[in-house]
Image (cartoon, rainbow, N blue to C red; front, side):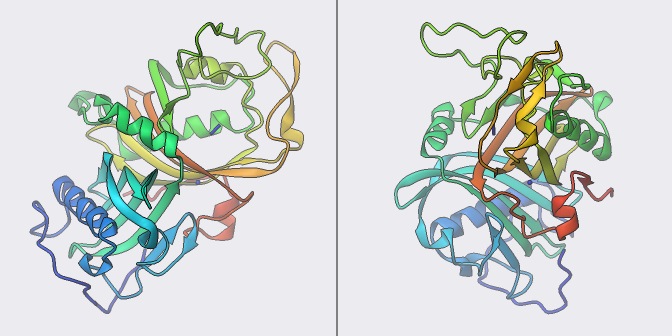
Length: 336
């Protein structure tokens, strides 16, 4: 299986042309994408002086650890990759970008969240690094993000920001201690990629038979989104916490969440399926996935899902929430 700074002093690192669409206040979609592209170019060049920052001490984290901008991945990066997927939130002034990069020549995947102030300066930078060479190669083989992520939702079908987040959150709530009896808002076409690999509707290996969701003792990547949840076999995900909804695009029906998937390796391993079978399954040691997950929502249903995830120590914090919020499974999303 796969979790705002207000500055009064302005210090500018480097000078760069303002991205198109940036004039006249808050960044629009084109502006946010331009800033993200500039950020990735600066990262690949190992040159943080190319960035326009809101202050000299802008908060920067990498896999939950606060670092100085220019440290961490900035040391080991060698090039950009060929896959990228932008989710721009014009209301919040944030953009999340999924992309492949090269670290000393080895492919990896990142999800980068940038907070942009009204003067087009970076005020927050958060990076999740998934060091999955195979996953990065899979994404680059796919080549382009799925069309659904760039397709506008018809105006009559668009939902509010809060409603989009509510639907996306049903996915996490339905997976946490999954019992197969919840309300699971999946479209018939729902499909999920994790670190570039199909984890739903997968073809399986040559000659492999498709397991029966009603008799199997472990869930299968060959099943649909709905079959996986209705099987009740994902119970070993004991908690999905620090659910921060960091980018929402109402026009395209997109929601990005950063969260943590905990596996307690204890009580959650023993459970009963919807048809009454007793099952023991799941990790035998406590550990956590740090995850960035993107949802396509239309007409109240989840259609396409894409995630990057990295294994981290059990109970690790994000570096952006209070301890109480970081341990909670509540929705963290400011309604604007």
